[in-house]
Image 1 (cartoon, one colour):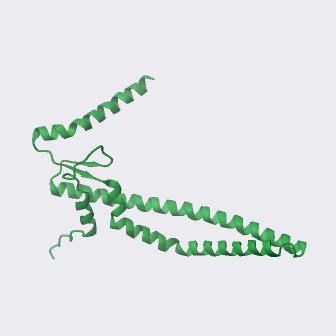
Image 2 (spheres, rainbow, N blue to C red; image 1 turned 180 degrees about the vertical axis):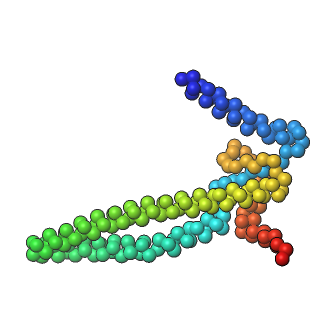
Image 3 (cartoon, rainbow, N blue to C red; image 1 turned 60 degrees about the horizontal axis):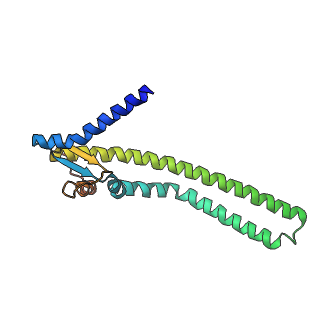
Length: 181
């Protein structure tokens, strides 16, 4: 019980310190604060669009194969519904067994595909997030910011919102410094 109370006090003190940090910076007269809308930055970053396209290309053949199997299953079900009553009992049972097997296979393949896509998308998001974080830090240092506040926040003036500048930098990266021969 005391450990929880201590944790709450520690978290409360940290939140208080973070809340007072902007006023302390401005009291010194040197503070420059920026705000970044992380959701908009991530959603609109060209790296994310490239990543989505890459994943679509990577998974397109397997998705097409799955859709082909789903079409085949639909055709088999229609055939069973249409001809099942007039088919020989053994043929109808074989067709029903084929339908059930294909249906289970499709469900398993769909689940595997979703899980793998989710894992790959998370890995890409993490990789891109690291790049975006580096860009934000680099931009903040270059522009002389003392503090960059990420979203969500209660309020941020458009005057301190640097999201558009960061998106511009992501779309048009600065050329690397030339190294002397």
